[in-house]
Image (cartoon, rainbow, N blue to C red; front, side, top):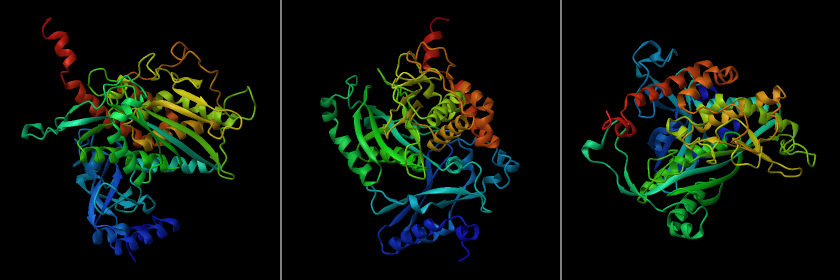
Length: 480
């Protein structure tokens, strides 16, 4: 059979078997439609929905998408000259709004419990000649995981994800509400906030929590807990550890799933770091990570000496790599202008590149002890809008540099807001400059990709700088 997958040898034996099972289930009539989804440069899911018969053939043929999707910033505006030579990307095959191809990874198949008879599958992006698309962020993480595997190690991560959910009062769908972006929905609170982990607050939103619990578990996500966070209408979900690409795949599906589920039931969910509401508290994405030995599955970060370092020597070197590349990786962990509103002293959000033992004020919170199979590093720098493939890849590349160079992270910063240390970027503009200056991350991510990513983000900054904010209006309109 001369289909796209076969012609270019895109699936391994396991994926071939998974695809056969997928096709058998389609032929048995289990689903009416298949959603082929691809995580774009922002970690936002895009794709096409095909009826079952068309989905069966598209599984091996692939699904065509226009290359202009690769040119979009967060307003969905194209910020590259797509009709210029190379489409403004300096990559052959991307000009003129040509097609690229997304190919299903059959191991990611899910049934969407909230949508009628609907299958969902995550895809990877390829050029029409079968070469990997250079801007496919899932492939960047796959490359990092493969580099780690050469040392007989696997990456393990658990997710703590904060977000806001509101009662949807008005969807803002009047004719004048459209645009790029359109007018956001009008919402009201589900909780007043400031009663962190209070049982009464949880009970008052039990209908939403039960809805999310039921649907996310039916989706097969490793949900462990649902929590009332500190801010008004703010919540946190915690997910158990998974390995390789799975934590990032979980995050892209999770965000889309929560927004879909909430919208269908009269709620509005947002992963925006710091929404513009009174008494707001910022949302973070805390990434718990460790490495495991492939030989026996044991956690390679477990220390062996009581009273010594909180992690094994490998763990401490990895920690030092995260610390050394903290500024360079900030733009990948916190990729929006809004995310930098979060980094404030004494706020449980980091403001400098430090580590500490079990201290939530530090960027890198270390949890480890002899015999503790859960010994790990919690990085608290991320915001929940981050593209998970880029965030996790930056962690792996940074940690591997620390291991290769046997870097020393220095002593624990037990007073994290007083310890002298490099300050984390305070703006997205500073973060992009730090990424460009980080030669190790530029090499590992690919200089072409870094230039592409920074161009998109710099276009967002340029649009922001042209806007007149409410702060400016209040500050100057009356006084001058």
